[in-house]
Length: 151
Image (cartoon, rainbow, N blue to C red):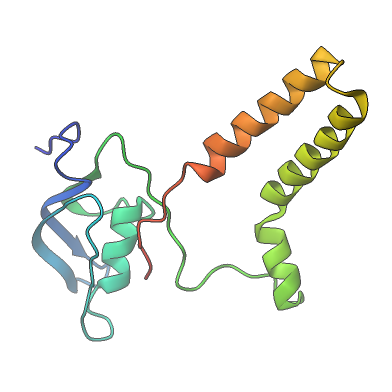
């Protein structure tokens, strides 16, 4: 049983195992604990389970044996090794699609900030909307940590 409230470790695994549908054992009895801020390297031959291990750690793959969990206070980001792309779009168009939500929030925030400057902060409702957007941006993006989970 993992203690995910313990601040000593940012991520823990205990007796982790993964067997593919064809019966091949990819991961077998893995026990790991990572300290916050640790730099981790995963080395191995092609097909040895490196990407699968990263997917388990990121919560993308939940079909495994054993226990694997981040600390309750940790946030994990995952950059896919092979992201889903729109085939008929350009590289720039695919990137724009990926960051659209954040870009829209930033554009809305910038528009509201210009309006607020023009009104010299006399519109309380506008100020509240700007504050709400800023809180959302900070909560959703600025506070997220990139934990180095790449496949």
